[in-house]
Amino acid sequence: MPDILIRQYGKAGHITLNRPQALNALTWEMCLEIEKALDGWRNDPDIVLIMIDGAGERAFCSGGDIAEMYAAGQRGDLDYGRNFWRDEYRLNAKIHAYPKPVVTFLHGFTMGGGVGVGCHGSHRIVCENSQIAMPECSIGLVPDVGGSLILAKAPGHCGEYLGLTGDRMDAGDAIYAGFADHYVPQEEWEALKVRLAETGAADIPSHPAPDSRLAGWQTDIDAYFKDEADSEAAQRANKLMARNAPLAMATCRRILVAVRENPDIKTALDREFRYTYRCVAQGDFIEGIRAAIIDRDKQAKWQPVTDEQVTAMTASLGENALQWEDDT
Image 1 (cartoon, rainbow, N blue to C red):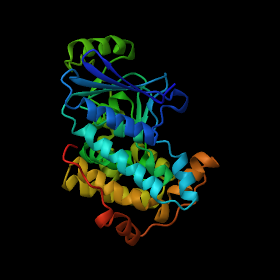
Image 2: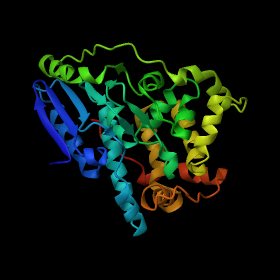
Image 3: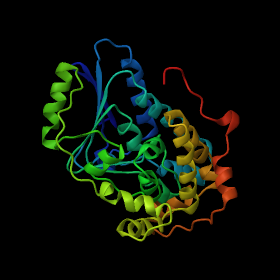
Image 4: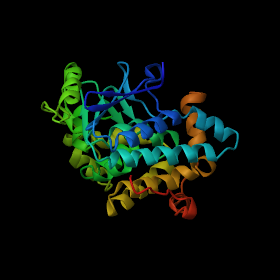
């Protein structure tokens, strides 16, 4: 079976991530195939909306397929990851700015690279088993794929909390924090897809969203990131952040400040790419992957962090910066 299914379904262009055995982890080739489909449908009068979903029961998309990035880094190949991220980020920008409705069905795990495909759509649907997160700091990366834009727009300091801890959001949290729009029980999804394909109208009949833990913690989260609180939220943040790379977390905070000043998808991706471009050679990414998925010892040896390092990881890339096409 192909890793991705792309077809016309009534008036909809329908994309299904089809690696359920790998929790639909996103490969480089899958990114290119999604982009090719979106480019082909952009001016197709027979396609009036896009639907993106994931095969299997466990995940929309658990993230990027990073094992090959580790292997390339071990070989001293810095270009593999840089080129992958260039193409992936271009796709993220295209989804964000797409001129037709993009309806995404975010069941199960939607993490990392899955956020880039699923959470920049115009109509983002979650259900009772949705679990959305940006856990990149746990592997020495920063929240990327344009996720820093969503984090920067989240209420108060929720962006810092979610980005630095990597904590998971359920459906209620995802809607509260701006990663999703509609709560629809999963048993209604197939009928909804049929209706979307038949009518071409992105009319989503939302149900009331579940209560949000983050909403209840908002005051405590804001106080925590002003160094003013000891609370349940603070204790959870401390526990989760203790496992993460200090350089990645410090850089994440620096990125969120910059994106809040200019809340635009291209600003977010540009700032993220400054870090990911350098993360194999200068950051903790290889060590983070080793500890998380290669040796699985969960004992990453992070480098200490200084302001100078953060500045170096966020400096302009000059001629190596992302280049944007007019149609993104």
